[in-house]
Image 1 (cartoon, rainbow, N blue to C red):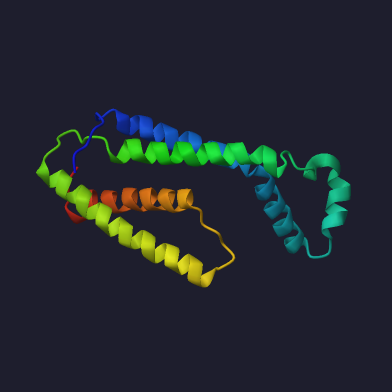
Image 2: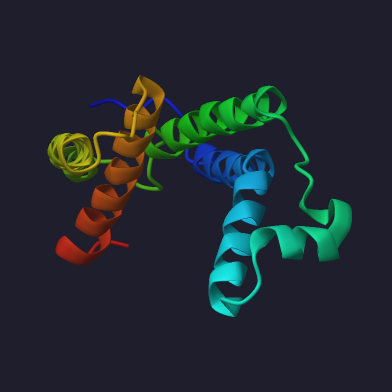
Length: 158
């Protein structure tokens, strides 16, 4: 496998993934808040959701509609995929055949892990709908983790 990007693109890729994480948080802020207050109500057991809503006023009013949140989530997904791609297909400081072998072995292992994970999600939770972009993002995430494991712990480089 030949790499096409210079080494400094690894840092750019990490920056893109970090920005994607922030955009994803912004796009899903209403889900976070709803989950927090449902947990808060479960912990307090005596107070219903409507009572908390009355005491908090407009604090529980959603920030975004589903249509307004979708560009944030889509942007985070695209930036995440781009960031992982830049990170994974950048050269190492010293690029040789050994790193290329680790990279190709990690790619195959990550593909199997992605298949197993996706199969388990479809089997155990059929209500979850994974789009192709989410599966690609999972594959890139697994590839990153398997490559880091193979490079640092299994073969003891860097």
